[in-house]
Amino acid sequence: MNDDIEFCCPKYQRAAEVLTKRWTPQIVRMLLSGQQHFSGLRSSIPGISDRLLSERLKELEEESIVERQVYPETPVKILYRLTDRGRDLGEVVSAIQTWADKWEEVPV
Image (cartoon, rainbow, N blue to C red):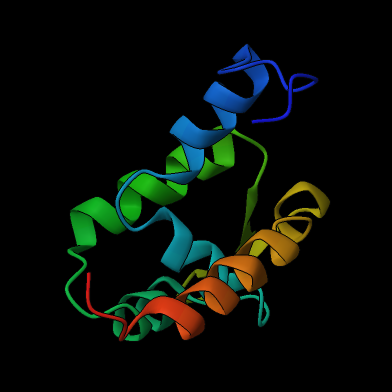
């Protein structure tokens, strides 16, 4: 390990905690393609419940990763999109995909 890297520095630990919650990487990945309705996210992420998707979106809003846009129409239109901070995760998502493509089918 590189001696210049502080092991488990607080910023890294905090980022890891936010980004490794169940379903969070999938939500971010889906929003990288553009803004989406709740139902679009739910149908794009097999196995996620409405309750958990709602909870994760709220957490990502609190972290300034996702922005919720409400359009006062009838019926009310709500869209979710990534903030600049969230879009910066694109390289992280890409790196995870590259790693998965390389190692997914390799026996452990």
